[in-house]
View 1 (cartoon, rainbow, N blue to C red):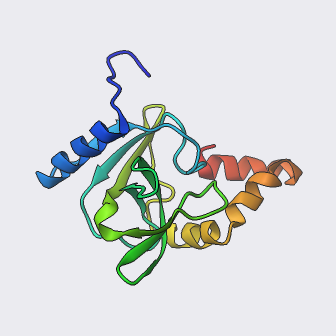
View 2: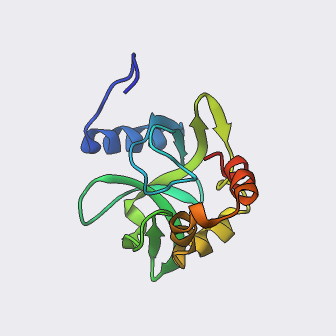
View 3: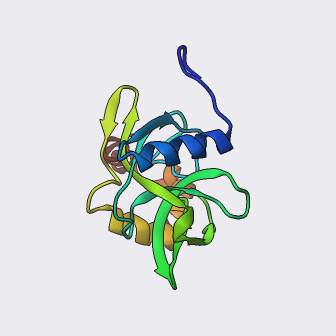
Length: 159
């Protein structure tokens, strides 16, 4: 946590986000964890806004199994629920009821600059790769890639 920042419990943070989005405002906060790496990293600042949930969008949601706030990617849908999965974890969170989704990630900030990768049209490809665990394979075999390929990917992914 940085100076001048306040820490909230997951439950309090969920209520703050709900209240803020209900007033048609956006909510900005620092995230923890690596389940969305490399697109959203530990200590990045994300902005959550109301909006249409669509394939590939990163969404803030309340995990029904834990009751905790999480940010993962929508990789499918079925029967009024969303299939949501972190980009850097092997299994989806499962089918999440629409009512558990709070909003979409509309901005990512890392080290005081905006990160746009994963928020545009490329999110559809990322969702497919995430759902098929291909992103995990890339992480696993990262050091086997030629240096020139790693350098380009690092710049592209801002890793």
